[in-house]
Length: 128
Image (cartoon, rainbow, N blue to C red; front, side, top):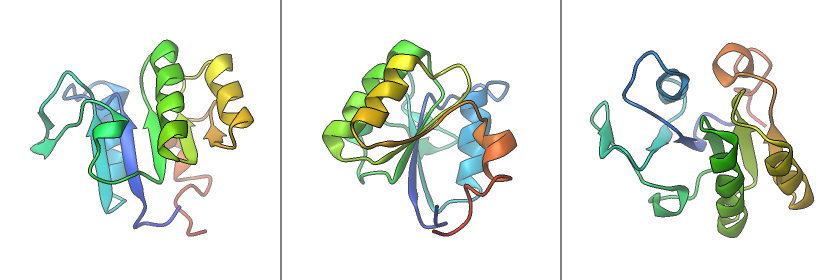
């Protein structure tokens, strides 16, 4: 994924102890456009937070989910409708239904790997 990629983090949070915050901050420090998505917040670290993927000002190249599996299942359906082609499901946010939906609808899906711990190390950050 190129450094100028547009990334959305669904489940971003203001709680610095949670993975939603850690993932958001790690990506924000690396990519030029990272949008927090969580209907509970108006902003995260002074960045506008969006209630859902469809309300983002730009279509993301990748959506990262840091939410319960049932929410991820809705998120991947939104990604399909919006033409988003890549989803990274943080451990604990994946479900068989969400993974199968992505595969059936030609959405690249990564799961069983933590983006912060594994992602940058395994080449997620390499230009394609």
